[in-house]
Image 1 (cartoon, helix red, strand yellow):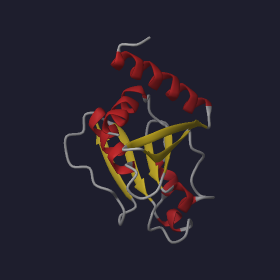
Image 2 (cartoon, helix red, strand yellow):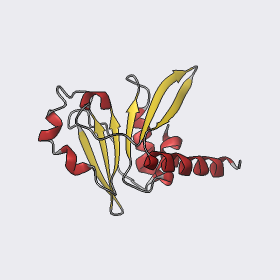
Image 3 (cartoon, rainbow, N blue to C red):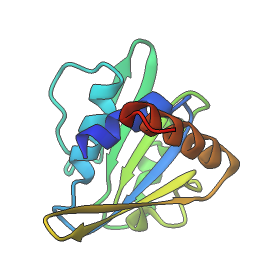
Image 4 (cartoon, rainbow, N blue to C red):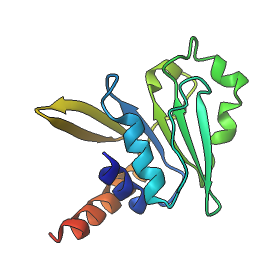
Length: 149
């Protein structure tokens, strides 16, 4: 999960919205940790389960990690000033996006996480042209990391 997150960080050009969908313990926060480490973040990465959002500024690039698991009503996001987070340069990683339905913007990519044997199966669903560009970049990064073309 960390390696995949790091690869996605290297593929991101900024401004993407990524929904992470999976049961508890599937590795959503671990994936976010990988993204942040891949971007150069050195500090701790914790799940923002109670604060709902954890902001990061990595070399002038904003990254917002949302965990909406404890959100009672999607309208609560309006009090959080949710719309201010989704800028052209911010990478937004959202756990439990179904809890924010109707308020969150459309995802560029939905990342589905499932148990498979002793590991995880990751499935990307591309939702926008920006998501397609990210997926194409990610494919190039993953192929260059494995030495395959």
